[in-house]
Image (cartoon, rainbow, N blue to C red; front, top):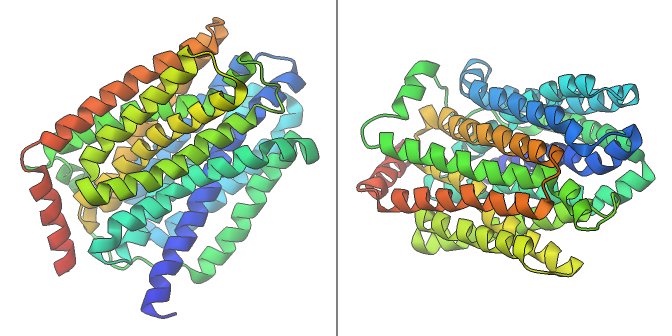
Length: 408
């Protein structure tokens, strides 16, 4: 392949890997109402499976830096795809047992695979592209998450009707295995060899000029992920409280995820004009206003779905944006670790948010109140982005990193 085809090939393959990552992450969410009905238990009883999936993802994110340095980004990404594919197939195999414990065990495996795919795909794609395109490449690859959720939401009802709950997970396992074979054949190796120790790379995230930025970035990620994964994990269930049937509820996930795709595009256009930090002040505000509308205004079904789309646009775009900022902030030697740790701190929020929401559901708190409470971390995240925007030297630090990369 030519240099240009390699650059775009790694972006396309990375996007597809992250898309299937996003589909698999969303699959448990959109089958929960139907699964709860089949098993004859409350949807809140699946909270351990939802939470433990995210714990597995956190562990995968944290391991991505050292694993990528040890076996290479290409092998790490392909291995991650295989692992989450096997986890999805394992999910299908344990469903007949009707055991939340067994379901939780296989979801840990799934989460571990999911956790290494995103930082590895983003790092590999950005390594093979010029410095002035890295933010575009980062957004393009990361949009796979929202796109996967959109696919899950759009086709969720049809899949549940045609192949059933188990069939959803067989598809979620089979397609990634096919992609893994293509990736092993066509995905290039890392553009440069990384020899630094994991400890050194993590320490560099707190080097002078980056320390406060890293803390604000991690705080922003934690808060945004609380909201994003609370919505992603429980929206189909929450919509049943709005009067949607179990088979109709996945469409809410489609609107939420498609809003994230649109929001990611808006984020990129906005960041190109005003910078990523100001854009990350605006997008959470859009999410908050949309969630307030969904929680407090009397809406028909279509208006409610569009409000969910607005929430997805604001919150998911913010989630994408923190990874894009991490790509800009960290040099190649620390980029996988920087992206992975930012995502991992965010994913801790993805454990806290759905876990708390599940407890609130168990106590029969109305879905509207849960949506309203979810606006709080998003507002605080907007404040973190505002501080990051005004932080002295932040622009110089990012510009310096980009100049350093361009000179390599």
